[in-house]
Structures are given as structure tokens and as C-alpha cells.
Image 1 (tube, rainbow, N blue to C red):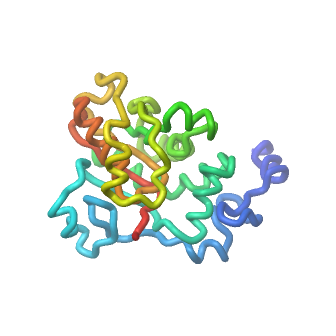
Image 2: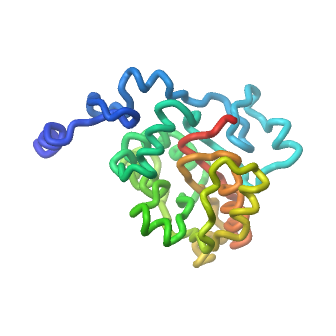
Length: 235
């Protein structure tokens, strides 16, 4: 308790979006929080808002290779700023406040029979450049909460990225799919064979990266793959 109080004095909590001081345990200041949008009812096939909660027309026509998609927040506003700081601004400490939004969905996945969670991997070159994998940091930051609400093992190397794919930027869905085709591998198939796997990333844009991860895991023997993103791009 004393150490926690001392840490709060020496390193007071700051807004993940603008870096203003905030109360401990508060991810965004009131001004930034106005642009953080929690997602409601989603299509389980692509994690896009869809009122019925069933598969949207797009997923009925062309389903993704994962069994279920989930996302916590809409990408944009202060959240987008926070994710950019987290990924490219050497702000690893933002994993903790951002990860809190994932805990309810991770708990839900554990309760519905998911056996393990793994992050979308970075290529070794990108990992050396950045210093950490943001998806793995988000997962690690949830471990204390998950140990209380529902255990979900994290396997950090269930997937590896074997191709150093270019930055996807604003590429079309087809361009993104082509860029990540055969970019992943499962180094130890026995870890995922016969198991239900959840793949976690920071942002889901077109779904191409998560789809390729799902294909790779399924080919390695996973019986079902779910995907989860902190943020879902809505356009």
C-alpha cells in the first residue's frame, strides 16, 4: 500500500490521449473521454456495429476465417491518439490504462471456452525497432485482472511473423490481404492443435491481418479462432 502511494506521488497518472494529469485508474481526462466511443452491439463476424447482433450482410456473403470477432472501442479521436503514442511514441506505459477496456471481452472469451490468447506478432526487425509488441503488452497488462475474473493463458509465441510486411497504411482490403498472405507461422503446432485460440491486436482495420492469423492457426490444427481488437476502424 505504501509503495503504491509513493508511486502515485512520483509517477502520477496521466491521460492516455493528451498526457494531462488524471485520477489514478482513469485512462482519459474528461475532455479526451468525450471522443472515446464504446462499441455496442456488433456483427460477430467482423466486429462492425450491427443492431441485430447477428452476421451482417457482408459476412453472410463472404465470412472471415475466424469464428468470432470482438472489439472494445471505435478507432478515432483521443483513442487513436493514445494508440499512436503507445505504438510509435515509446509510451509502453499506456498498455495498462488501455488494456482495461479489453478485460470484459477477454473474460467473456474465457467463460465461453477459449483455451488461450496470443498477440498478433511483430516481425523481429520491427520488434527490435520498436522495442516491444504492443498487442502482447496489452495482453500482459490484463493478467492481474484475468487472474481474478477468469484465467486465460497467454502464449506469446503461438504465432510468429516470418515476413517483414510493409506498413499497411491506407491500403485497400485486397492490398492488405496480399501484403500479409503467408506472413505468419506456428512454430509449435502442438500448442494450438485441438484448442480454441483468441488472437489479440490493437486495431482491426480491414481484418486482413487477423484473418491471415486465423488461417495460419487453423491450418496448424486450432479447432476455432476468435479475434479481439482494442479498437475497430469503422470506415
